[in-house]
Image (tube, rainbow over all chains, first blue to last red; front, side, top):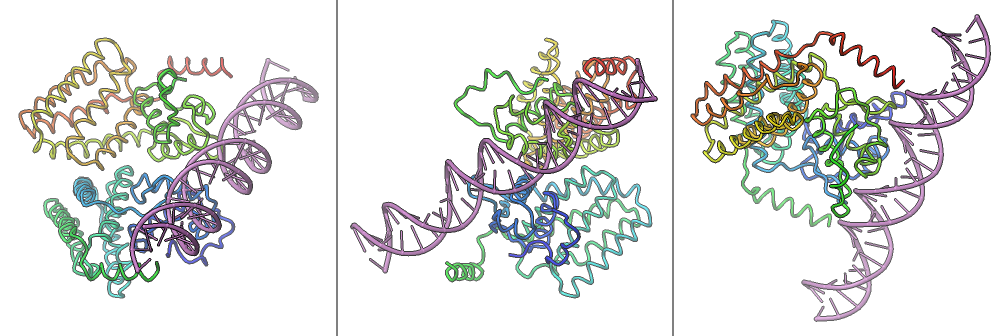
Length: 240
Length: 240
DNA sequence: TAGGCTAAAATTGTTGACAATCTTGAAAAA
DNA sequence: TTTTTCAAGATTGTCAACAATTTTAGCCTA
């Protein structure tokens, strides 16, 4: 199990890491899909990884549960959440509502500088994809939506969307197409920025909705394909 | 300080009350404006009131902080949050976005049964107001918006709006008009239900937005009136 | 009397030990 | 061989004691 970054970047003078820090690390791992839904998180292992006490991990668990990133069962610890199809539906519905609303606010106030920053982000996405750095690409893809949302200048809505983006990451990990995503949102973000630059509200809205609908449409809620299933079974048989 | 209900309704067989329970009690007190912004919440006092250990209270604090209901300062404990004017602006902006979006979803699927339930709620509001039970009336007023939102069938958005409603309660307590609220939303809710019943999307949307804007417009961010200020100062001088 | 200093009290933060529960693994029975 | 049972180990939940910090109260001085 790989959570957080290499221990080599920890040595900045005794920074005991707060529960928020632990939360952030776990969330980032989820966002980059290094932590798969269903993964068991024991208190002790996180204590070791982050160099914090059980108290801190415990508090972090409470916050992560509140954000629907993990599930806590009494006496049985924490596992990374596995959103149900219905939850997935609600997450995407929420994202459409929230992001279109924020987009309308943004399009009225957006400055050329903001557009530049978005374009610069698109370049990052592109390079990550070309370098086959999928984890990074997945993260950047999610962060694009967050950057866009931030421009609306409403911290509360921004924080809420952040939650939704993390949940989306779990959903895609669970139900997303196997071959990762190159087919998914290659040009969509770019077109959206174009529409934004031209203050084309209609177009931007439509693109955003289609983009989200596209991702949702590619989900497969059916029981996993037999191939993947067999592998899973064999893997478990080997270790059990 | 009055939090939660009388101790006489606790005796239901050893139910140790979870952190969620404690959270809910505190939130309800905020919703009914029995807990004013700025009120200090000591761990010990809450332990006593709810009959739980310090651990539970501490966890509840963490969750309440996450919901912006209290503020936690290191080594200085918890106080009921005092949203800034900017936060207030964002809360109302968020509510307009969220509630209008949910309203559009609701108006497509609402059934006569749902309308009846809303009307029944309106009667409760009315009776509370007539009986001058302001605390109850304030709570019911907030719950109306939640009931309406629940009809949209999106639990995630519902939970989010819930947060916003609690924050609104703090904002009104801080910046609201002195004479409480009879002038505020007497007929607004009723008209909104009428529009809903007639599936008049335009009208319902407009009423909702006007309703929220009205509440926001009545806020007074200016430094408190000298009268109230003097009282506060004297009160503090007496206890200090 | 006002201001500042110090010690006592109160409150919060942290840790570790212990209790409760679940999981694992092996032995015994079918 | 398969299933059941039970005990040992591992993990989580709770609590109380202790440490760190803040707040309060009294005292002294100017």
